[in-house]
Amino acid sequence: MNNPYESDAARREFLARDERLRNLGDVDRDLVRLGQMPGLARWLEQITATGGCARPVYLTGASATFSATSGEMVRRYSTAAEPGERLALRCRNRRSSRCGPCSWLHQGDSWHLVHAGLAGGKGVPVVVGSHPLVFLTLTAPSFGRVHRAGRCHGARADVCEHGNPLGCGRIHPDGGRLVGEPLCAECYDYPGHVLWNAHAGALWKAYTDNLYHHLAALGSVSRSRIRRVLRASAVKVAEYQRRGVVHFHAVVRLDGPGGSAEQPPPWATVGVLLEAVRTAVTAVSLAAPESAAYGGRLLRFGVQFDVHEIGGGDDTGITGDRVAAYVAKYTTKGAELAGGVDRRVTSAEEIRSLGLSAHMRALVGVCWRLGALPELAHLRLRAWAHMLGYRGHCLTKTRAYSTTFRRLREERGDHARGASAGEHELTVGSWRFAGAGHRPGEALIAEGIAADLQQTREIARDHLAHGWVGGARRGPRGADAGRHTGADHDG
Image 1 (cartoon, rainbow, N blue to C red):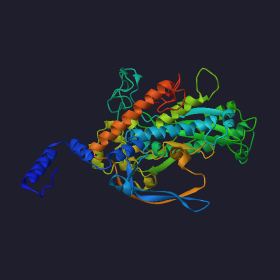
Image 2 (tube, helix red, strand yellow):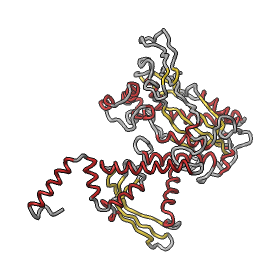
Image 3 (cartoon, rainbow, N blue to C red):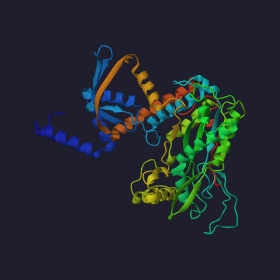
Image 4 (tube, helix red, strand yellow):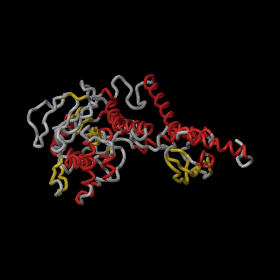
């Protein structure tokens, strides 16, 4: 285009173009900008390298790599030559509702983390596969009757004290709107529900501690000595039931006192572990802080409990591959799985405007109100209202169970750098935050890149040998073939 300052014709042409751009939508206008951007090909390379991340983080700065032996500079990198003088990196958000590409990568790392503790690898000795291993599900108790998938509560003539029927009599599909909703919201114990979510992590800690006591009793070992005899290594994932309460799927493994490389004592068999995890469930309880707002609460696990040996060769088909895929599947989800929100709420007014069911809005609202009580300040319920009170990480493990997410990311980075990475090199750099997220046109292109990569993975899933190729363990009995051991219940 001619310089608009050179002539009247050039000025009219510029104004006409500007008018056409203003008449375009935000996406089209941004696509025009991208088409004229210097270094567009390099920007596309950056976004492809992030897997089509939905909200990349942009950095500006430089780094230099030196030989650790000679001190000479091996290579140098600067964002000065990049489009906009910045570099795009993954947001690394684990939630599939926020960033599909990064959640897929997190799910793969979760699979490797869990599987390494079941079969070895990633720095874990393969001998762990011969240790006693069980897969268990711990649920929450009932806080009131809720609608169930399939055949719901049978129709009944009697009603509750609020005049609502105690039965339903209908058949609800799995994804039905009423599944998880209380039959009577006034009868439902919302404070108890929120307090249980808020203390679920502490209940799990109490359970694992209590497990040692039951193992000591079964092995005729004193409680003070049991941790010097064996170690219970575990990994758990939190899943939200449709009623909005978390329950845990967990792997528990018995090791020697030195960790995964040592066998447990001969008496610590799978049968002993199965018995210990069963009896420890009923022995665990925590008292919630008392308050005039709701009284007192004694928090326990629910009556629904399931435990199976992993790799026992029975008809349950509970194999290490399937367990790892099943656990990894839930690491990319949060309260939105139950119909909640995937981001923090900041005010009571915002809660009223959320597009949630009445049950979910009531849970978020109770979190907000209880969060104002001084006796519950340590629970930070307002900060975690979007998680319905649960503030624990979705996936946690004991130190000796397997590898770490950090190590997995480092291995992936070393693999990506390939031959350019040396064993005796030191990299130093200076970086600054330069923005995050996409403009409208950029987001459209990133979505296309992510879709193309997802299609490639689906093709790979159909043609490659069994192994992790994203989303599920490829094989005749993948993650989705596993039975769900923690179904919604109403007590």
